Image (cartoon, rainbow, N blue to C red):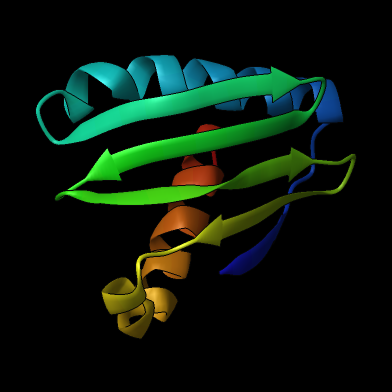
Length: 98
């Protein structure tokens, strides 16, 4: 899955908002999502999480203009890729206060 989501803030502000959004989301994910990996390298997040017994892995790169998410979905979830992309885009927009 490949998603590009434009933003109208600085790269640093976008990174800070994503980090803060992830912190705020953790309590809501308890018992549903297990974070296996969350590693930041400047403006690139490498992640892995398990939900419903399936693991999702990928990266989120934040540039001066957009979020770029590349994720590997479990095979059976690929039929819902469009819905998942829409949900990720909505979450990203929410983190930016839109």
